[in-house]
Length: 451
Image (cartoon, one colour):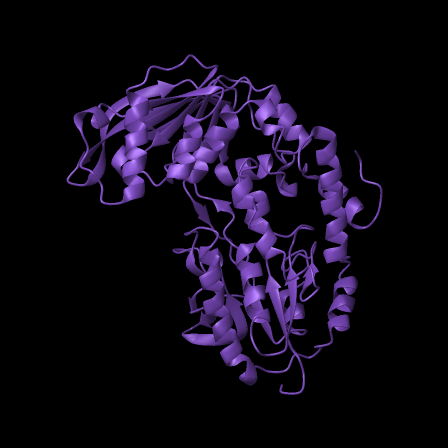
């Protein structure tokens, strides 16, 4: 081991995986790192989960891309590990250690009748659609009805509401794909109902997210809080929470300006049934809640909101990784500080970081300390890890070819990047995403992409 460079594969090119790669490079040990991703593009949730108009949040990409620019690590996109792709056992033959950073991408269900109707979507799918994720280009969410319900009390719920409330001209300045922009331009949506199970004193938004919906050019914010704010809520200790309550109180006391769209913040409301007509959403039955002894309880009082689309933004679960243990209760791979644990014992050479390690919590930056912990464990274990059968980097490339995989390396990704910048120039934006997988691969491998 002292005479040969250690080889580490990081599966997943989102923030958690790229922070892990950066932490490996920062060590004093000679480590060769390959970052593998199922998609031809890096950056994971920063690219496909951050709303197009959140330019400042997307700026973290400049940090995440640094190790690639001087070719310190290898990016291999379009490489699916697992069923239908390259088996994990094959990967293990080429690396001393494998860090899994695949996240949590499954939308949690509400568990209410009617949830399977057309027009009932998880926020993961809906956000992926407007962010240009190749898996969701065919989604076509129904925007032909004036009413939409968004279920959730976090920032993702506000993102969905804000994107639906913005004008197409505002969104044209972002990297949103052209087909999505066309759909938003022809949208009939006028009333977006954000259903929050608890009261305003319990919201999990951030002040910046909340403030943004109050600054929309074409939408009023209406606060439906059953008079809680007017009656006076015990002032929270957290300064950020106080800021949000002040905003809500100001909005609740302000007459709507008569803008063409409205975002309704409906507190103490839970969806209990989604109503359908001819197989698609036509309404949502909402129960009024009350807080008793610190707990949320239903009052039995119900109303039906006239909506054609319901988006649930209530969190995510992970999918099991074939070949690794999985805890369905937490949606994580059992681990000790990032070391994968099976039957109480560490699995040699197997590590996790990010949401698949800790669950879908925290912000983008949380992944940095998470990755540092995992990489510290990996480096500590490295001297005792068995030598892989085929450590030569060329051997792994050959193995990918044997499985019919033509990876998108960093140079190929930069061609996609350049094509997006070119498309942006045509629309007056910094870039416009290439969303279709075939077009991404055409651009990556030098074929002429469609304009």
